[in-house]
Image 1 (cartoon, helix red, strand yellow):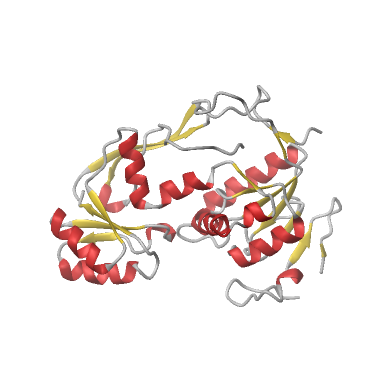
Image 2: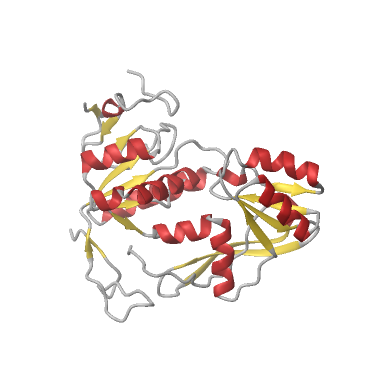
Length: 308
């Protein structure tokens, strides 16, 4: 079976590039899994990760999964060739990369934890160190959308209107931004699970209390003019690099106070480049010494065996 991941025309062409890139040969891929099924790590990531594993295996690609949650579909027998029941953190993921030496890694199938982990590995130079290609969503695109300030700037570049806002890295910055905007305001934390630390503030006292909490989860806040009372019509659209679009669903008459969501039409964000497409240790108790014992091999036979 052909192990090359490539589009139907067998070339990879970025919209900003004139010459097609050579197809990337991927024989082994690592997926950061969904982890705990909680807010920010909901069941859709377990489903999407399971489908990604299935698609990769159909292409003949060996699949490696990191997921500490045994109660997920993607950790079921036969989903991946090998599963590491380890925390999705830079420490353990780098150890798995060093051991398995995958050709590529997918970051977009494990929720906020996987995204944050992938960004940190990218900043540390781990992917370059082990020559691992990021498949699918590029790290820069993740950073552009997770960083509230960068996201607003990207929207401005493509002419998408957004509510007036200011990025804040300190309490003083947040207070000054609120004074400029006027209360009530919305506080949005960057790189946070399920909107942790985000909410409405009607005065300085509420802002101080919420910002103090939010800075425990994130080092950046977006202070935004409140939209309380407004309504939105939101469409969730999947778009590939060739501008093929599928509207997955819509949520009409959704009240903004009930859902702190961003609405983004299916327009391309500007980017410089795009990469194609016993007892087990818990997330809190696992140590670097125990990671090698937390591995399952998934052979073709129905039985599982533990590897050291």
